[in-house]
Amino acid sequence: NTVTPEDAHEACSALAIPEGDADFFTIVTVRKSDGGIAVSVNLRAPIIVDSKSHIARQYVLANPRYPIRQPL
Image (cartoon, one colour):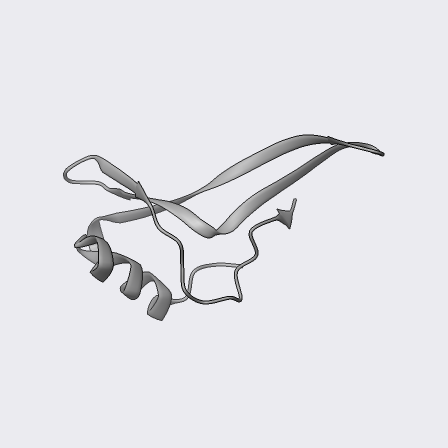
């Protein structure tokens, strides 16, 4: 899953970051499970970094298509 242009535009507008300056990162979680280790990524709330100001913020996307725990 990648962020759609519409969802990226919404996030950048809400954070007042020019779209060309926005870098999207995700948080990876590693946790113990019955079968060993479970690794997932949070696609619903990416970290968005303004590459010019070097300020980063986590933003929760309104679109429910992005899972909070996407297995890797």
